[in-house]
Structures are given as C-alpha cells and as structure tokens.
Image (cartoon, rainbow, N blue to C red; front, side, top):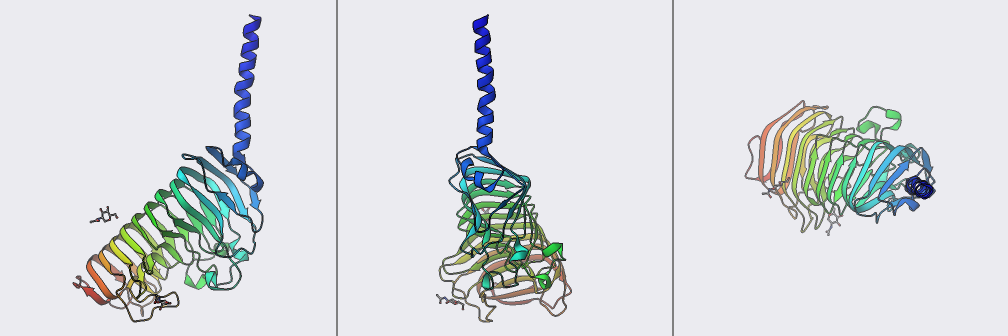
Length: 364
Ligand SMILES: *[C@@H]1O[C@H](CO)[C@@H](O)[C@H](O)[C@H]1NC(C)=O
Ligand SMILES: *[C@@H]1O[C@H](CO)[C@@H](O)[C@H](O)[C@H]1NC(C)=O
C-alpha cells in the first residue's frame, strides 16, 4: 500500500512536470524567447510584445511538421534595415501556422515616404516564406514598411484568410493615398503548388506579383488600393506556367488584371493562365493590361517577344473604370498567342485596344 502510494505520487509529479517544462520552453512571450522555441514541434508566439529595432525573427530550419500558433500583436519597432532584409523569415517542411488571433505590425507609417523600394529611407521587407511547405491561416499583417510577403522556393503552401492592411490610419484606399508605396501583398517566385485564398488586401502595389512559378492558385481574394493582380514582372529566365486566378474582387486600384513582361526577357515565358470571375470597380489605369513593354521605370511602348505569352483565358471579367479616358482592355504584345476572351464587360473606359496577338481573340 505504502509502496503504491509512493509510486503514484512519483507518477503524478512526473506527469505534471513534463508538460509544464515543455510548455514554457515552447512559448515565446518576448522577442528574446523566440530563438529558444525553434527545437519545439509545437510553438506559441504570444503577443503583445515588441521586436526591437533592427532585429529579425528567424523561424527557418524548423522541425518537419511543426505547428506555430501566433496570438496577440507583435510590433516591429522602426529601424534602418534596407530591402535586402526581411523582418521575419519562416522555412521548413509541412509547417502549419495558425494566426487567426495574431497580428504583425511593421510600423510602416514611420517609414513611408511615398518612395517605397525606389529611394528615400531604408525599408526592410516584412515576411519571407523561404522553402516552406504547409500553411498559414488567418494572420493579420498591418503597416508593412515595403513588400509584405515574399514567397520564394516554396512547394506546396496554402495561405488562407490572411489580412494585409497597409493604409495609413485606415485612410481610404487608392492610388492617390499611396504613401506606403511598393507595399506588395504577395510576391511569389520560384515556387509551385502555392494557393492563396480568402485574403483581404488593402495596399499600394501589386496584390499578387507572380514572378515565376508553376501551378499557382489565387482564389476568392479582395484587393483594394493597389496595382491589381499581376503576373510578372517577367524578366530574363522567369517562367510562369499554370495559373488559376478566380473569384477575386479588385477595388480602387490602378489595374485589375495584369501580365507584364520586359521586352527583352530572354528565356522567360508565361503559359496556361486563367483569370475568371473577376469583379472590379474604381480602376484608374487599365481593367485588363497585358504588356510586353514593361520596365520598372514605365512602359516603353515598344513591345518585344523574348518572353512569349501563350494560352491565356480571360473569362467573366466585369466591372467599371474610374476614368473615362483610360482603356478598359489594353494588350500590347509582340509575341502573344492562343488568347481566349469570353464575357468581358468593363464599363466606363475607352474601347479595347489589342496589338500583337495571333490569332486575334473575339472582342479584341
Ligand atoms: C494549366 O494549369 C492548371 C493549373 O492552373 C493545371 O491544372 C492544368 O493541368 C494546366 N494545363 C496544361 C495543359 O498544362
Ligand atoms: C532589358 O531591358 C531593360 C529595360 O529597358 C534594361 O534595363 C535591361 O538592361 C535590359 N536587359 C538586357 C539584358 O538587355
């Protein structure tokens, strides 16, 4: 009897002690505690706390199958890191991040000077997903200094229900409020099997910029204030093949649907792209723009076909322009083929202008 009691008391202590110890080591309630959680397979990052200026969160090299729960607000104090830095980097296989009650605040308004990544004060990028597979669900990100998400080298990744808000003090959204310039929402490169669904984006640059990748899905997202849903910019060697962009709304933005390639993008190509069920309003530049004359300094007017654009389906794309003097549909190609346009109805702009597509699709 006595022996049994000792055993059970020992067992109870052991059972209680183990999770307590494990738990405290896997919960970070301050910046300094994050590094110590990286060996855990279930991590909690619990705000509120502040990441000191010029410090970065490194969540690369996580154990396969790690789950991370982010709660509360994590604020990144303003520093002077430049665009070669990312405030957060996450990498690993089958990583599942639950951010439904978590928020990152990048202190963007303290950096924003209207110059974005092209000059002015140094601005770090915000969150890099590097060789990550798995998922992120429900995270809210506000006030990105410049680009918000960079997705690079990711194969099999689902980003679901993410909110990105880069409006200063929640000002109305649109190009004329573009203080937080170049605050791209999702930049995707060298990736496959990436699905972005149910995002709400309020920003001042591309909602999606798909620079290279295969089998990419962008579904059911709301894009407001930026430059639209873009493939490109395509540079030398950039290949985009197999894209489905469907059921999105684009509001008060420069463009809604866009494919942009440099004229001289040798070795690049864009193939097998569907944009369908897109609703737009308040578009200031182009409802649909497909161009092979893009440069970061503006379009040249001289398209080049070094990167051909082929097999593009545009289906059920409708809505309205903000200005009467801009083209609702503008295609400037040198080498574009097999385009299929159906049910395109964009009101309030100038008539469609199409150059350089063979065969010429209906309505072009
Ligand atoms: C086109 O891309 C989609 C993914 O968006 C893919 O499912 C489909 O198989 C591709 N079609 C061809 C002919 O490659
Ligand atoms: C391609 O064109 C861009 C824009 O005109 C230019 O900046 C770049 O140097 C060109 N690249 C090559 C390899 O010619």
